[in-house]
Image 1 (tube, rainbow, N blue to C red):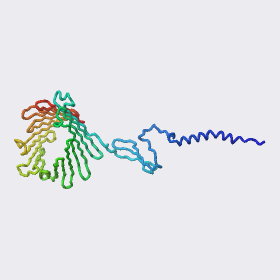
Image 2 (image 1 turned 180 degrees about the vertical axis):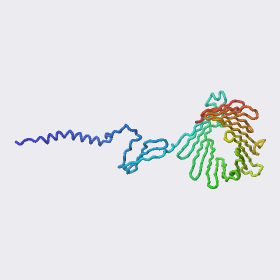
Image 3 (image 1 turned 30 degrees about the horizontal axis):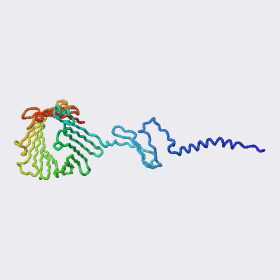
Image 4 (image 1 turned 90 degrees about the horizontal axis):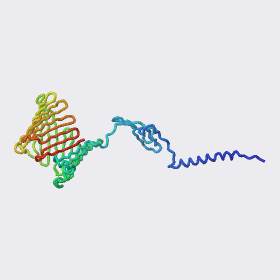
Length: 371
């Protein structure tokens, strides 16, 4: 009787469990939801972890490793590139930033201020800057007291935008909630000067070309040639150094469409300052035949810098003013020249300001905040 061969059956019995486990593992790995994912090393920050290489997929990848001050370090992998490369670049500016925010509240001292915001005049504005494109957007709104007639004092809003356009210049546009709008453009023109043009919703327009000329015997002339819907106008301004501490300026201009010498406008200014520019005295006079009663106006301003403080006193045809400026504060008072009574008092500390003025013999307060 031939002997039985048990080796093949025993081997098959032992291999059967391993075959079942292998088949189950293959089935599990083929299922997307149950596919085993490699563990991620959490000891390093995700900002400096190497990106997956999608060479077979033909994709381009880039990842920011870290940034320091004004520069960034990037890891970049171009399509079908085996080894990624490092690139240092300057940090680009933010798409939009808040440049300033301001608000103010104004009302009579007493019940009007206590009834904020229904009994006061409220103003708010914000400026948004777009550094990447060099744009500036300004938004503002005015809310009058609720007791006033909506037609006499309606709510108002305005918006303006300024943008530098290549080959055009600085373009700006303003629009208001009442439908009024205006636009302007400033552009330097080589060998000619600077062009300034405006146009608004009332179809009023103007175009001015300002041209500066070389100094002649210490006097620098500047001529502005302009035109409006009313006619042509020309303005001549001459600036010069009379002595070491004395500067002088004189301007002559005709109103648009008026060419008689009697109708010309005159403006002159003399500034006397000390050697260190710590003190200065400025006298200014103007002639305008359109002014009521007396066609001549004048003002005198004295400025003194004492350490971190700047003192300024001025007197003109209507008022006397005294102002003191510090790095983080300022104070000013305005006195009516005829009655010699205080007309307004201003106080500002940091970003907060307060103004008190007399309106119909009643004190009116304005509180403001600017950031």
